[in-house]
Image 1 (cartoon, rainbow, N blue to C red):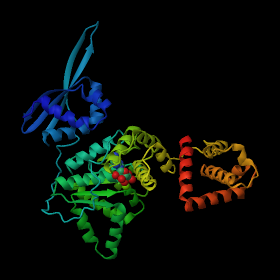
Image 2: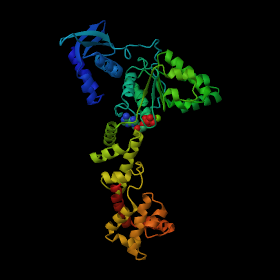
Image 3: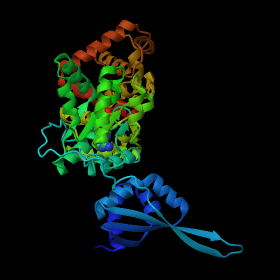
Length: 466
Ligand code: ADP
Ligand code: MG
């Protein structure tokens, strides 16, 4: 039997990995384990908390994390108590200190389902899970902390937490599909007695429609009703599909009554899902809903480093910063950026540095236009070839000048200046001259490798200025 201190130390190890250093410092280091007792096979841990506010905050924000952690360290049968310190200012400078005890609210762990379904010895269900989507690969930050903690709790105790159903919601590319797969994968790995099924709401719908056509609705219902952990992705697609909703409603009720775990995802909060019957919507809200927010800078950085590492890519810190600062919408885009960067590096056999990143990711990163003036582009290209900028405006047909002029026009086009605007600033030429210039440059890029390299070289300089 561990001591209170040693058990709490072990808990802190787990907690440290799951919160930011700042949170850890603020909320967890001040806690003190004051007792660990065994009572009727239940391990009871008491933590001393420095004040009522601290207690409220822990209960509000970290109850789940604490409960899950305790379950991991002390086993499923555990209870957590807080000993809250209250300091009272008496009249004058004297203070008195008292404490009161409260049990942590019982949100996870001990609940067992009302009715345990008979476990089929060998589940016959093919799970359709993607093995790569695991908890290990899921980077946790402030943006997804709650959803992640809940998901872990469910994965440790499917059907046995208050989070049933568990609904994860959030915009595209924020990790909903990954997280719900991770739940399934974890259960599959640790609970071979549980049958797990992942299905998109579209597939559920299609299968149901097919079952109707083939008069196999009963078989369909029976199949879904024996699943221990049913994971349905993107439930907003049930919107407007009344018959499917009706069937799903029945499946849902039966699974829930039997204490089987239901995990759902949606691209928006349940209240905003359109075309779904009220009774079903309200059921979605019975358990826990957790949202995934767009990743903050810290999380984006962590994700980039992790993903690069996974594909064996050594990203210089400057490049990580550049991507993390500029690609902010979601995690799928971050992944896309990495793949693009890798492709560019392979294609041009260049080392990955900031200038390559800027070029590779210019489509991902929409910056305001016209940061570089046409004049600036002209100067840059002329400097590159060592000619005087005024020569671009001459009415000469000298090949070397024409080529420089065409290239300068080409880069101005890349910066989205109109043909007309470009023509005007190149000695009042008309729009068709610019069209022709761009075409000539493209031809040369395709046919002359030397030229192509020069263009790439100049483009690097242009992008470094934008
Ligand atoms: P959604 O279902 O919300 O549209 P996905 O789960 O498909 O998003 O996530 C998009 C991509 O980002 C996937 O490749 C996924 O593995 C990855 N991803 C999402 N969240 C994380 C995370 N927290 N850590 C690591 N990878 C993530
Ligand atoms: Mg998805």
